[in-house]
Length: 265
Image (cartoon, rainbow, N blue to C red):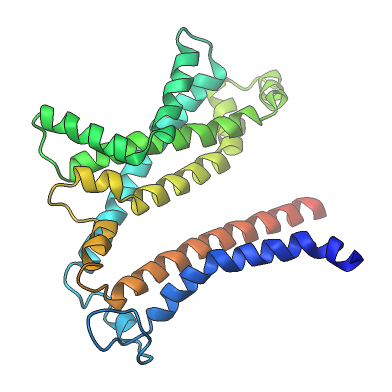
């Protein structure tokens, strides 16, 4: 009983992680499957065909690249705007600041179906053609909220004495921002950008309402599920997961080596 009480939290954490990663493991495993028919639901034969011919199915790579391009452009714009909004909310006092804080949380709190249908009604009333631009506008709108929250948390956790010390050493506002403030906030900005890109790449509901004839990767998967998802989709999904895992592990390794370097010096 003493051993159980000592290790129960770790055991539960391991079980939760296993539960979370089982669907990902199934997706990766079935990317090496060679199905008999259209549906890749039962294991038939081990094969590298999905990886060697990853663009062998019409439309799958095009939709994947469309999602990547939309995610990159939306993330860059939303990160720049969200970072400026976060600085304004944390560093300045102005009329309507509390209302702005409340409005920033609205896209995060509102259900995606409400936001998607509302934007669709707006674009239709303005007679704005649905497509790449409307999806990009929609993605920027809900990514900004997450960027603002992440960067605000980083700014609020900063020690203001560091900037005061820079000013005491005769650093101007531009030099203080470049050499002190920005390097300290940069990890929060990068984290917000990665979160924004993943949300944009993964979004289905808002994109489905405002895409028109545009086909993103989630929309392609939704359409393919009605006639049989090819293993190439599993291969691309596995590639995305492996890339994200590599980025996280790389960041952790860099952080560990940096802490070790600082500790030795």
